[in-house]
Length: 410
Image (cartoon, rainbow, N blue to C red; front, side, top):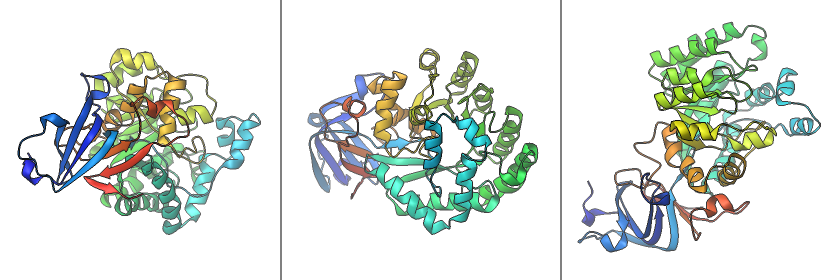
């Protein structure tokens, strides 16, 4: 695909965690090299096997560091106004997440703050949060709407998300989450609200090209399976893929529902049963686990990792960065939590923020592994072995980030 004489850059003196499945742990290549041309990986392998005639425009010495694919945070709510620190105090005093939501707090509190903020304010707040992820090796981030719950604010949030992708060195994938909660003006009229989202907001969001996928919250404090299905049917008619917040607080059949639409992912999943897992496996739907929310809400029911493994369901890990249930600013911390709380291996955790996170965003063909032809998103780490990324807490060993072949300046 790329002639060695036309390579733009070459990294040598590196160990590579390619994250390709089926071979060595982490897809590791010791004393490797990786070449870039036109923003894509042109060649990857052992340094001693470099093709004859390789004359890159620039050669970088990685200093015996490890190179992984750029990390991917595949589930965030990172665009919002305000904070919910007061609710954190209430939870510490014994109030549950559901109790706070039913009392008018929770998502509705953030909706009020987000509606009141203009685009520049939302952008400035979100840019700081995204930059913290970039500093930890993140090169792709998914951003949801869902704190507007009206047409104009949902569009405002998605415009901010698109702007983040233009102005920061990160790839942004957007998800329209209009069916996140019931806004005050539709109190007691959930079906009418779904009609509004389906018939008025979603078509406009699609016309403006602001959504890469459609998401929903299928839960007792969200929307039931029948309401979610109506939204998904509309999304499918527009050619938009779907994903779903499913089985976080109870089993509402959301995993099986999103699998029926061949959804990209089902997320949370603490209460999913084997029938739901089997449906996901048959549809190729990724399980996205969110240990930050599990930790912050002090949940005790673990997602059924053994079932995912048994059925061959890919497991992604994400920050769920949001102001209420997961005020998380570190994807690396989620690797440790995935290992310590959910008992994933360090290799599974790293795959969960690279290879399987890419699949959860529909980017498996272009991102998530170090393979020739894929986008040249790289993270360079000052570590002795990849397991350190899940092992250490509160420590950032990221030395450099490369996005589409170009080094990112911190």
